[in-house]
Length: 168
Image 1 (tube, rainbow, N blue to C red):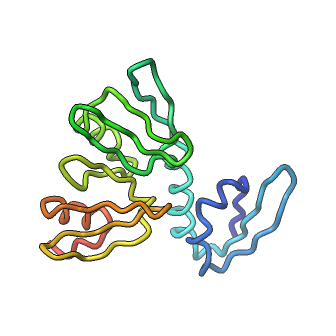
Image 2 (tube, one colour):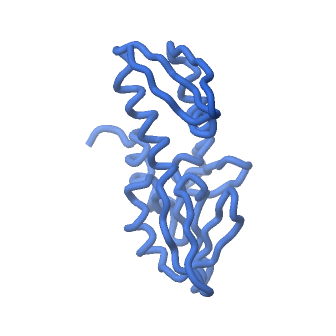
């Protein structure tokens, strides 16, 4: 048996992943939860804990008036609008920053934030639904009902990032 102790707010990040897992949950003091899992579920739990770790990572971005620190888990998507780059977040609204989309793509690739079009990066952990569209495009729905499109030239890399790209 493996015992994992989490904050209740971290548990909310992984609730859907835990739905079909044979896990015992107990409430502890100080807003903590203990998860007790079978040793056979080790790989699955490791994956879930990595998701928590990534969402708690912080990145500092330069804005036009200074610097802002954001949690990766708060970023929904990033948009280039002319020469303006806007990070759309859950808690902090829209933030205009100075980095280019190309720079952000390189900085955030390890955090599962990938390019889906000439002007957009998306946080894969915020994608709720993926729908096929005509002309080999994909329609995405993010948490909060936000809709984006994966353009044809980025469909293959998007599917590969999700692990649904097929055999090479």
